[in-house]
Image 1 (tube, helix red, strand yellow):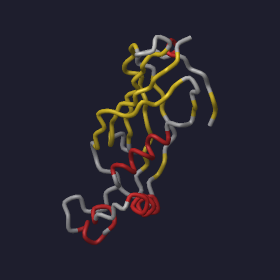
Image 2: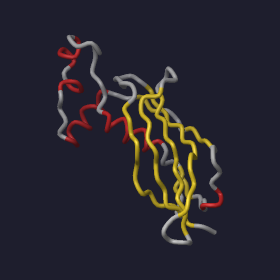
Image 3: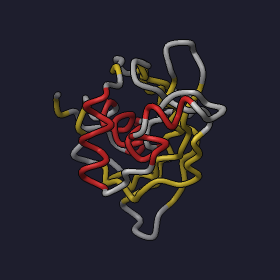
Image 4: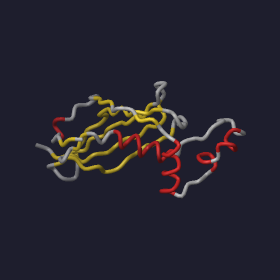
Length: 146
């Protein structure tokens, strides 16, 4: 992890970065369920899941989001502030043993209420080991101008 100042003017539309991967484990399921209180059988009951069309436990969407976004935090920009996330969708299920990584593309730039700031949208795709998009969202940033 490192710090790198990137100002509004430095962001270029369609610039892309790709993170390292992370394999999802049963421990991830258990810890996330404990943190959130979401012990739904879809995530925790292996035998019940065998009787369902999906056939195996499905990762919590919020866990996939948290891990996938965590992967993007390899570089800290002290000139930017997260305003949140929009248009999040759980596209495909993630299972124990799947390996995910994140691909981040600068998709929009615009003005902000403060004249010394701009807005940047990072389109985030979380992708499994088969190259399938499993989650998408837009990360909204408020970024200082030079």
